[in-house]
Length: 111
Length: 115
Image (cartoon, rainbow over all chains, first blue to last red; front, top):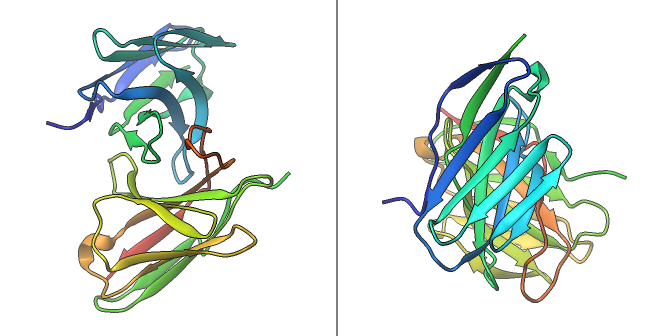
C-alpha cells in the first residue's frame, strides 16, 4: 500500500464548475500538507501549504485536512480552462525532510 | 527575483554513462532537495542538502549522489545509467530551518532520456 493515494483521473468538468480533488494517506505522523499544480513540461507550483487539521482558503482555492480520517481535499471554485493541469498532493512529517507525493490527478476544464 | 533554475533542460545519454545535473535555488533559499518524476507519477524524493551536507536520503541506490556548494547551488550525479533512470529530475529549494518545515519551490526540471 502506498503512503499517499490519489486518483489519477482524468477529471473533466465544464468551465465554472466546482472541482474537488482528494488524497488519502496511511502515515498518521504526517503534519504538513501541500497541494501543487503542474502544467505540462513544467515543474510543480505550490498552491497551498497547511499544518495539521482544518481549512485554508486562498482566492478560488480551499484546502481541507481531516487527520482523523487521513483525508485531504482541494476545492477549486469557478474553475477556468487555465486550471487544466495535474494536481499533486504532498505530505511531510514534522521534523522530517522528505516530502511524499501522490501520483497526481489530471484535470481538464472545458470552455 | 529568480526562481529555482535547473540546467540543462534536456539530456540524452546511453546506458552505463554518467550524468551531472545542476540547480540554483531561489533567492534567499539555502536548502535544496532533488526528486525523480517518472511519466505519470508523482515526484520521488532522492535526497536533501542543507549546509553543504546530505541530511536525508530517499530509497535510491548509491549511484545517485549529490553535492551542495557554499553558494547553495547543487549538483545531482548519476553513475552507471540504466534505462529506468529516464525521468524528469526536479530540484526544489526552501528556506533552511532545523525542522525542515518551510515550503519547497520547484524548478522546471531536467528531462533525462537514456537510450
